[in-house]
Amino acid sequence: MTTPGGPTSTSSPSASPNDDDTRLAQAVQHLSALLVPGETLVAYAVQRRLFALTHRRVLVAATSGRLIRIERGILGGYTPVDMRWQDIENAHLQVGIFAADLTITSRGRQDLASSGQATGAIAVLGLRKEQAEQVYRAAQAQEQSWREKRRVRDLDELRAKSGGIQLGAGGLGGSAASGDAAGDDPLARLQRAKEMLAGGLITDSEYESIKAKIVDRM
Picture 1: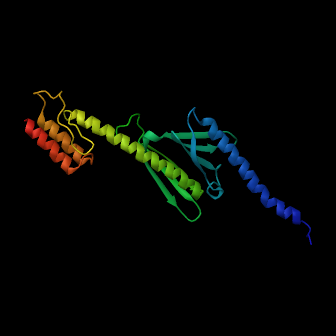
Picture 2: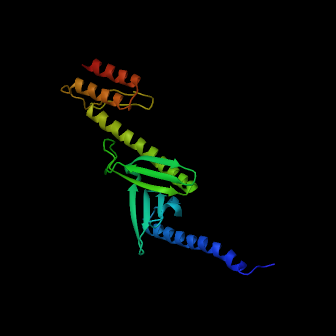
């Protein structure tokens, strides 16, 4: 037997999810409008309503080229903030009972050199857990990829500054470059090798091999 007000009580709960889906679709549309040619959306996460009682909910997305944070304005519109993957310093995820917090810090520089200092961050609290984990995995993959690119860049720069010491695929595969002139300072080259060792760019055995080659040329 249908009680009075029964249809009303069953239709009211469904209105909120539908409204929520509509707003989410609009946010994703805003996000898609920001993508440049060739850029693709990898994953996105939405802030739970419980964590956005005093503001509109935030959406964070990982694309093929950057991380984007979008916050809708109270009176309409939205404000995007983005971070290039080559500037990423660290990705951190904290998963709780109801939601997850995601923080991505940036080095804030224009090249691949790894000597910069972290200067900014994109942080969003209270994200849906499964979505946040997907964005985090994408950020981790980019962080590891760009860390390796910076390591190779640093190796090239230190090798050039140390007089052209060649590192082969299996360790030390070559000798000093032909550009080494008699006036090159072997002590300076040895110091560069020590810096590479201290920075974890070469192993102890590689350092000993480099030192032996430098001493042999003295």
